[in-house]
Image (cartoon, rainbow, N blue to C red; front, side):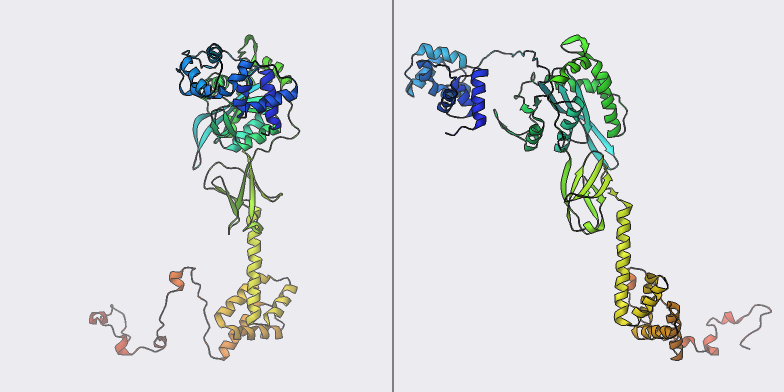
Amino acid sequence: MMITKEQEAAILRLFHAEKWEKTAIATELRIHHSAVTRVLERSGRSKPTSKREILLQPYVPFIKEMLDRYPKLTASRLHRMVRERGYTGGSDHFRHVLRKMRPSRKSPEAFLRLKTLPGEEAQMDWAHFGRIRIGQANRQVMAFLMVLSHSRRIFLKFYPGQDMSYFLRGHVQAFREFGGVPRKILYDNLKSAVLDRSGDAIRFNPELLALSSHYKFEPRPVAVARGNEKGRVERAVRYVRTAFFEGLPWDSFEDLNRKAAAFCDEVAMERPWGSDNGITVREAFDQERPSLMPLPSTPFPAFDRVEVTVGKTQYVRFDRNDYSVPSDCVRKTLTVVATMEVVRVLDGVNLVAQHRRSFDRGLTIEDPKHLAELVQQKRRARKGRGIDRLGQVAPSSAHLLRRMAERNQNIGSAVNSLTKLLELHGRELLEYGIQQALSRDVYHVHGVRHAITKRRAERGQKPTLPIELPDDPRVRDLIVIPHDLSIYDKEPTYEEAKPKDESAEEALPGTPDIFA
């Protein structure tokens, strides 16, 4: 069986520092006892083992299993069970060993007051402090607390949730406030720290392991139902509730965290130290600070980091809000990196947009520059499409527009006006009007319009009036059947003009009868 360097180091530490038996080490590390013996012999520091201990060692895991399943199993019965499995030792030594292995049945259990060395340990926990309404969003108010076990110094920070990014950011900010890092941190069995646990087999969250590797501390989940192991941070939660939060007026996370920082730096630091009421927490922390491990040269990158895909519009969706990006980012996959204050949008390593973060929901947060760029592009595109269309139906339009550009006239407006003339009179008259304007050196849309109107008059055609319809399919798709308008040009006969109601013929006094 191959033994890793980590297992070898654990075997030597448990055997020499903690004075564990080799069988207990093998059981804890889930390896064969012969591997433990081999490591100890190779180190040259293995303590001698009696023959009776060697005889009983193969049966220790079986005995522990039986005691866990049947705590009241008698020593005589267990001795017979192991003899049936090949054990040849006597009952006296067996009973002596069994007394050490049998779990204690004392009830209730009393806890010893745990004392820690300076810089050795911190305890961390989340605490729920209700909810806050931010616009249309209903956010949680979660407090991140970390307490140095020796000096009882408190770090307190409020977040709108307990996401992994807030969990990591709380550590980074706590270490910065402390000016150093404790050697180990105790956690409850929360998902941010422990993904899975079966007894003593623990699978840590990979992001917590990355954080602990960066700062060189040991993450340690407390045992299940061991209330004395994390009591300092639980008492700190009660202290924050009663001495700080109750009755506190606040209106935003910025305001709440500003007041929390002042509370921790002033009120909480001046309270008596738990181990010696003669000094304050501030004085105890001043003594503990040199024992903390130094901070690394760069902080751990604890940000919200999400990959997003930009759709047809120039916005990215993050935390229930839309943030604008430049129009050339449409249909791209970008990265959103956010803190409590700022949302940054990256294209690879390039920063393409930056906004102030909002904890509301359903908002559209825009940078005016992004919208101006898009409007300018749309105008250029619309003008380009209009020029292409005119060039296809009226080839002379290219020469006219070029001459107009030389005179610094508004080409976009000219393209719109020529397009309307095209829709009103058709391609033939538009080309004729442009040629007439060019032949007279009139480089303006008015010259084209005048030539078209004169041509229609020569043909005996009546002036056309443009009709502006609303952009509504119920109107644009409406079919109107025209009727003969010549009846409006005829003069009415007497019979047609005569009122249907005979009484209407009675004129007012003094009014002449026009039909007389």
